[in-house]
Amino acid sequence: MPELQIEYIYLGIAIAAAAAGVLGFFYRRGKKEGIDESCAKRIENKLDSLAKKLDDEIKNTDESHRQMHEKINSMRTELAYVKGQVDLIKSKSD
Image (cartoon, rainbow, N blue to C red; front, side, top):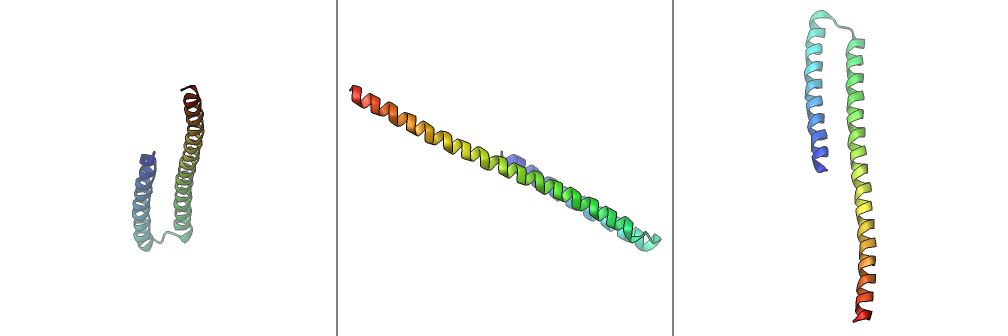
């Protein structure tokens, strides 16, 4: 499952690089052509929204991993108990 986290990190880096390129393009173009501030603000808000969605996905993945780890530990405890009971029965029958 750690591959999913790495993929999200790479996706975040790609989005950040694309955002920097887009903002740089509009910044230079805005200086030349006088693009209004609201256009840049809309783009910035959209990028912030994408970054938040990515963060939420990463948190959901982390939470899923934590829950899976808890379930595995619970199963280990139950299996250890069953093994102990089997060992006890075996020792009494010997």
